[in-house]
Length: 373
Image (cartoon, rainbow, N blue to C red; front, top):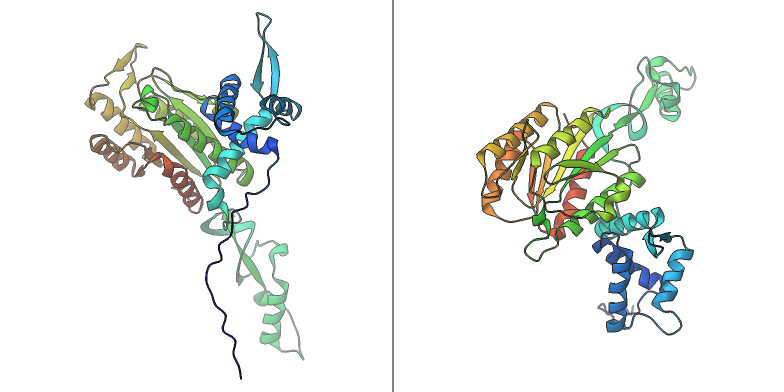
């Protein structure tokens, strides 16, 4: 018999770029620019015009002005009248959502493929999620949960076909798991060091926050996410305000952020609670009882760090783990984070900006699989 041998190998061909309309092509670039400009439409368009001059992004039949007109027609921007009578454009809630989705696809897109369904705890109980395992019927189980086919099979085995009977001992139910619900507070450092040394650290942190919020809103709608920013003080911001987030001339008041995070989580009814903290620097500021600030940007101040350790231990007593994402590699600061993490018995990651989204995603998903105590 003649056998045909098939040669296996790689076939190389010219790359064909997926088709995009002129609007979609510019829109992808624009979403990146508007994130970097913290929602400043005019600045983002100026950058887009400069890129167009350099890389010929448009054609005579579709210009930047045509793109701006499409943004208005599609409801992504709106005109507003300034007090002096001049008009300006601002982004709408539709574009805010598009930016969150863009961040989600950019950071978590590849990881989300292959992950299906909500994650569950290891605790068994009554819920709508079937595990595929069976157990004996117990008093109080819903009749809807009885696995009829398996129960009839048991009756046939136990009593035979001739004298068929179905007793309570034959009944089995398909076991279920509780869905875990998570309350998360994401703390973002907006001190001045987040843009120092020629590195933009606030934009990646902002993107991660937008991606995480969109993930929770769309995939885990019963979970809650609160965003806190902290500099000299700490305050909550709405998810819709994330694209506009900027750093300020602030020191780093980690204690104020932790206090606010724990106040928010105390009011949550979910059993599972956690704090994610994104920071690049040491704590350097405290609120004093008389309303003043104690600040010391030089080194690790024992007075400030001891307050941080106390807050970490307090969170541990409340069953709130803190995961710190340290986006610098300073060994001196790592000592503080190690001690802080030990006080809370939480976790710490020393990560580059490129790994930040992936690590937060994995930690969030992992914590949803287990009941945090």
